[in-house]
Length: 419
Ligand SMILES: *[C@@H]1O[C@H](CO)[C@@H](O)[C@H](O)[C@H]1NC(C)=O
Ligand SMILES: *[C@@H]1O[C@H](CO)[C@@H](O)[C@H](O)[C@H]1NC(C)=O
Image 1 (spheres, rainbow, N blue to C red):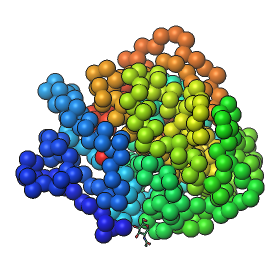
Image 2 (cartoon, rainbow, N blue to C red; image 1 turned 30 degrees about the horizontal axis):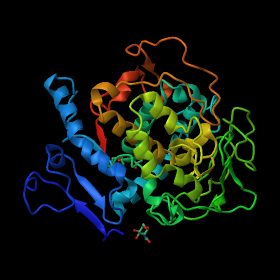
Image 3 (tube, protein in one colour; image 1 turned 90 degrees about the horizontal axis):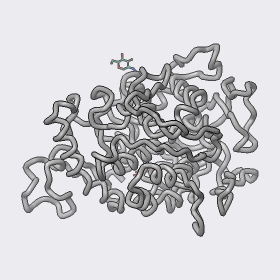
Image 4 (cartoon, rainbow, N blue to C red; image 1 turned 60 degrees about the horizontal axis):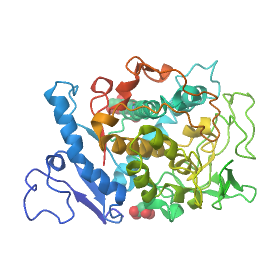
């Protein structure tokens, strides 16, 4: 509710003044530099608090770079703020929705011969993700590639569809208990579209090797009939048969045109695997990046856990059926970008607990993400300073480690925080 939104702009004047709101973050330099907006309906969870407590470290990290002349012009004052969906005002949410629907109407730039099923600019990103699953998901690049990919998408929304905000993220914890009635999925004009209609043939999504080995259907599974994306035409994919009853693509690589509705199953059983206590444990329980990476992916499968999916999988299946449930085609549901924004945020919070040790940490073990057969394990040592991050025709290649730093990386093009 817009009326309920608490808008807290921490101006320098308020810092240190006793009249500041009681729940304001501790008066530190950062709080006067970033515009914090909180929706009063959602009290801060353990990860939100961890993030607030982390900001002085972020500030110290950035001050050190500024002193060394290495911040590439990025400061906390000019950093973009990626917000949680329900912290955004309703007009801002609607502006975002308009920008996404605009991208779905602009013509594709992808090569028509290679990607005949890419009918819109929105599809360009889907087609890229479908054909570059390797570089997007191997252990060296998973985090960095998705950071860069999201940035390129955010830039397209801003530069090609005149969006004035930044990519929002989804704090799963806010919606986990009742996702269907949440501001993300309630199907009204300021949501990201509603649930799919009930499809009795949709049982859920299989989770080989986990116990339970199925994310049971939340009751949807059919076409989305409410909200901004109810008339969306999904064209690319699927690439796998992970989700039953989806008409096959006429091309085995999934890149042909296969027009169909957007299908969803807004799913509490999935969402419960991505609650804040889990994210907190993920961040605080792993000093090394390998552990963080494995736990995020739910590898090895947690035992004695009713929702043993790992946050990465849980976040995908909060909404997914088609195309969201097909790993390679998953950016075809616009909620993908909220989920990967959330993961980028968790990675950042993890990094900033100890920036000197963690900023450039790269997982060197290979976990097998369910549904993705990489077949590759990290064998030989890599020279991380030389390793490139090439997302092909989506954006120019950059060094891998340039895509590790939100605050000044990529020559300063990355300059954002999550709040
Ligand atoms: C849409 O849902 C949001 C979140 O629950 C609510 O704040 C808003 O008032 C709703 N808008 C309409 C038009 O019903
Ligand atoms: C964005 O704004 C420019 C300048 O006002 C306008 O020419 C262009 O058509 C707009 N683009 C879209 C997709 O609305």
